[in-house]
Image (cartoon, rainbow, N blue to C red; front, side, top):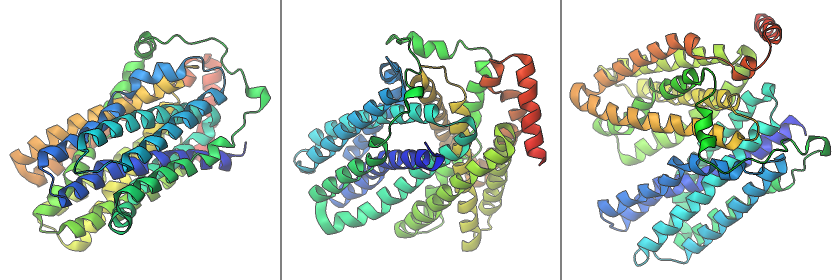
Length: 419
């Protein structure tokens, strides 16, 4: 299969995930507030994210009996079709009179979406060569950003035109259309029976990830890598509110302008990783994030001209876009054969949980020492992350090879970088 075909499959799958998720998690609360729902009811919407937080628990189920790539294709198509059917079902219920039913159906839909995500990630690990993973993960990140842009902007406008029920039909149609590229995927016979040993469905498959040699370094890197920028991203909207910007202006500044830079930088990040290699790319992206946080600190100290604010938004979102590509790529290199879905998903969940913790702490710091103090703290944390990468990063695939193979691989990468 040509690389462009692989990239097309991945882009469509991640768009199919992110568009409905973005709509349900960001736009639906706006619609509910327009319908005069209480804030406590709107808060219940956050329950739909639970399946994505604990999705690593069903990673072993998806990996079970993963003998070839077509195994994951079946999981992707089956879960995505079920996902589309549930979205259609949601359209037949009324927000006012069937709110609880809609929440339950959304949770079911997100369970199916998280299963599709595990299958998509595992398929991506299998079909992408190591040299293709940077660009392949650009498709993943860009699909997520573009899906957010479409789901939080275009669909809100469509709601005002066609209403709730028909909007659900449109969402379901988008999910099904995105299945066309993967449904046409056929695995060459010589690549079939990739892993003949059947995996047991067991929690020990998850614990086994943490028993790998030197895996503590990788876990530490995953936990801290976003720490220098994620707090700023989380507090960016409240900061703009406090500066006096309207909801409409903030929606454009972060939801369209910022997300657009995130999508564009994700494409760029894949090319940079391919050119510089993973470790040098990680260092560059971490340093870029540190500089972005430093610029936001400069803005927060009273330099709030509109041009500087837009530059800051572009810097912090592009740092997040490139960092996402880097994390996705190195996570693909830290999976065990036959357990790709479990291992990859577990690593990404670790970054989500650590980011959630950083966001909570950032809110406390912001209340204590203000935005300027928070952004300065983030910049300093970003500097620590940048300096730590040399000690924390290693390539598990090289670690499993004989020393002479590792030496040749390192020489090859160094010669590529020099050119």
